[in-house]
Image 1 (spheres, rainbow, N blue to C red):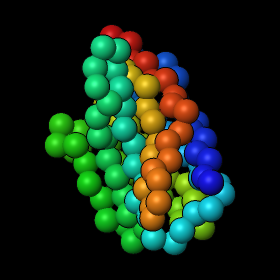
Image 2 (cartoon, one colour):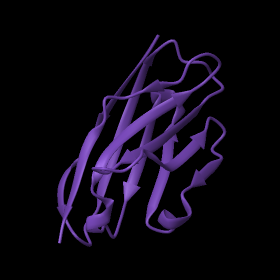
Image 3 (tube, rainbow, N blue to C red):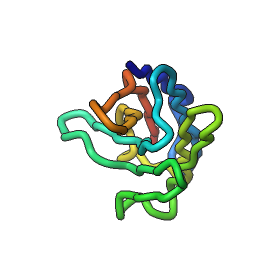
Image 4 (spheres, rainbow, N blue to C red):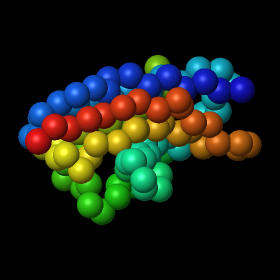
Length: 115
C-alpha cells in the first residue's frame, strides 16, 4: 500500500508561481513513475507531467516551458514548479505513482489562479 500526500497549493495571481510537492510513503518500488495530473471544473482529468525514477520526463505540450517536474528519490517526493501561472491553470492537481501493481493517487490539492 502507498500513500501520497500533496502540499503547496493555494491562491496565486496570474503571472505568479507555485511549487507543489507530493510525498510518497509505504511500499514503494525502486522502479516507478511519478506524475502530476489536473482536473478543472467540468473537465476531464489531464496529464500535466511525469518523471521516471531515472529522471526521464514527459510534459503536456501546452505546459512545456512553464511547468517543471522533478523528484528526490531518497525522499520519495515529486515536485511541480509552476511559473507564469494563468487563470486557466486553475484546477485540482493530483499526484500519481505508477509501479508494478495498482496505480496510486493523492487526494488532490487546489490551485487557483486569479486574473
